[in-house]
Amino acid sequence: MPAVRVNTATHGDAAGRVSQPPTGRSGWYEPGVPRAHDYAGLFAADGTRTRTRKVVPEVPAEAGLVVEDPASGFCGAVVEVSVRDVTLEDRKGRRRVFPMAPAGFLFEGRPATLVVPKRAPAGPVRSASGSVAVVGHKARTARASRIWVEGIHDAALVETVWGHDLRVEGIVVEPMHGMDDLVAAVRDFAPSPRRRLGILVDHLVAGSKETRAAQQVMGENVLVTGHPYVDVWEAVKPATVGIRAWPQVPRGTDWKTGVCDALRWGEPADGARRVLGAVRSYTDLETPLIGAVERLIDFVTEIEK
Image (cartoon, rainbow, N blue to C red; front, side, top):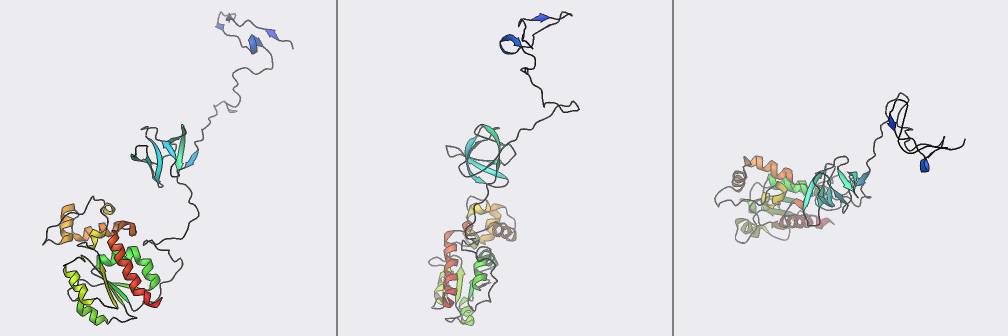
């Protein structure tokens, strides 16, 4: 069919209505040639409009990935990520935490959903103490050697961090409930080359009663180590329990009671649940305690290696 020339100016119909004529290239309308507005696929068979949903890509929140929070305009690189939130750091070193919401970020200027990255093939599994965990190992029969600690809180802390190591080695940790009768207790234990005794004490500093007691029992088969803190709670990093620093407790006041009063934690039993419940691994503890416990474990196990 020959092309028909149509005037591209406005024209009216029989009713006097004015409209623009449909045009193809250069003002020509050619039958069979699609017009500029093609509505194919926009409507379903029943006449309802077909809705299309834009797919928002999922982007692994790898360390160093730069994204922007569109609500605040904060732009930064990923430094930490969990299933709930992600921490971004901007070029000035400022950090902010944002929820891992669907389509919650802009990546390269476009909406994106951040997801926790898939883990690379894991290396050796580490225990809470940082040692290589022995997978599938059954606790061995307890050795004759022992590690003594001052109280039940010390024992609970050692179990939380070094429990795996102690079960692998067959070492039992026992609370002494004080050091008043340490000399007699060590004599009754009867240490020997195959029955060593390791003792962990608090406040092992020059001139303290703990240091004087340690000097009386130290020997070839007895090792006493400790930390400089008044109580084992203080060997837990303040940030681990959500405080800036451990409070100063006046001399003559029970340390745990003074701490709980200063921090409004209630009774010492309440404080113990807070402190011991916050520790997950050796990274939550101060270095002097870590070193003291590691030395004791080495001492009581080296005789049979």
